[in-house]
Amino acid sequence: AGRAAASAAAVRGLPLATMASAGPPRIGLVQMCARNDKDTNFATCDRLVRQAAAQGCQLVSLPECFSFIGARPGEAQAAAETLEGPTLQRYRSLASELKVWLSLGGFQERPSQEDAGSEGKIFNTHLIVNSLGEIEAVYRKIHLFDAPFVGLVESKQSVPGKDVVFCDSPVGRLGVIICYDIRFPELIQRLR
Image (cartoon, rainbow, N blue to C red; front, side, top):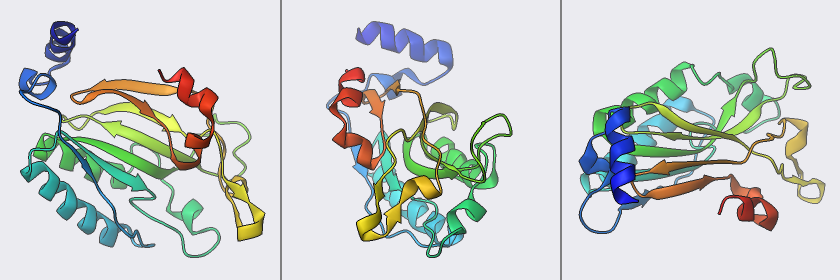
């Protein structure tokens, strides 16, 4: 299996050492308090990803709303971008520069015109970016968190995704989900 992964990595242009390094994989988990300011959040993520990469992490995982969290209704929709937008380009460049994979836990993605039923809503999207800065996986949150008793009804601003997503990485196979999805065992079982 290791030889097959290394061969696949070589075909895609990834350094073999990235896919088959000695010792256990190193994963960096970032905990942060995101703001409704993309530049401030990027500065924080940049600093923490650099620290993790300097410690030998092969993959660094950023939390849901890593790039932006709205403080008022409508801010997340206004901040949403396509996957080709400037915010993701910054994170893709960071991954490429540091030769580290990034798990971008929840990004406000503006749906394309073809996405029927979006009605001004956005996707809550988890992306996996490889060490070349290429997008490996795109997961749109399936299970939206609707808890009106605490004032959070995610379906008022987001469109649910449909696809189960996983990808291979230098630390192993990744099942890609977001937050509330963990409460649905049938989804997790499909990622096995």
